[in-house]
Image 1 (tube, one colour):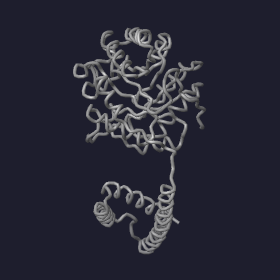
Image 2: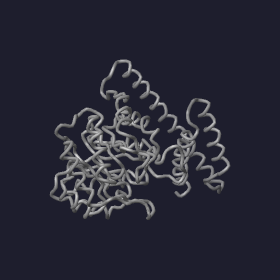
Image 3: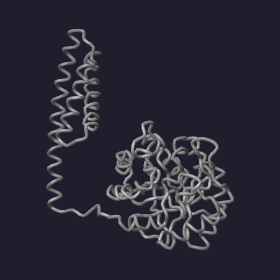
Image 4: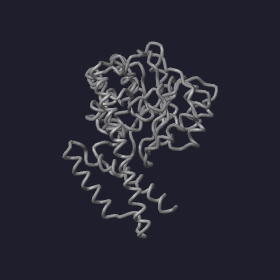
Length: 355
């Protein structure tokens, strides 16, 4: 399904990268909301975000102030002229936000992972023209992400974008949520005119990681950023560690280097031609490797051998991973490449054995 999209253009908001949406993780008190909004407005931020309903991993934590907070958002609109945005997870949330005049909605990662919930939201949005951003699902499933976009677009909404907030992982490393940048990059390839924002707060989980993640998102051509900013982050009622003050956010944004995407030079074109030559050589080598694999498959069939030879497979992965490190590549990356090559080799040998 091809999406029918229109640009998300807001009066008074610059079309230049990055589009910035900022505000606290949660709307906690009227004073906290207005104080943060005014500070952000003074720094030039045009779109204010705050969570009104907060789906938490476990019960017992702060799960949002609820409908009362929408009146504070309306006050932000009135006192600062900012656009306001919040997350919706149910049809009731949608109705309450539309009634309150919320300018922008987004669908959270947990909700995106549930097609029933997304369809409920889409049905509630029929006949409405409001920008909607869809966060990636908690698991790295591009088709599920695109499916959520199709449901929203199918309800008649055309001003749609996405938010990349990383993917949950059982193995915790430096990031709270693994970026897996290749997934939003593939999304951009599949849907070129789709606005993509980065959520460095949720990817990093720590305020010191926000600046480098913002820069990386810009280097990858993302359209904007949605960053959690609180007037007093250490006292935040939710996700305190990943929020920054408006002053710190302003400092981060001022340091960003925004590179052009389309400017090209003859030198760059020559390097790209070299890449094409390398890719052609890789394809030739892979074709040759697969031919040898098919010959091995024929040998195994004739001698009644199993396809999977575990010791040999482990030897290949270990040896090529070590070679990759010596060549300046990440060993895990090289292993992933050879795992994919091995998977295709097994598939081709299965075809031969089962003939």
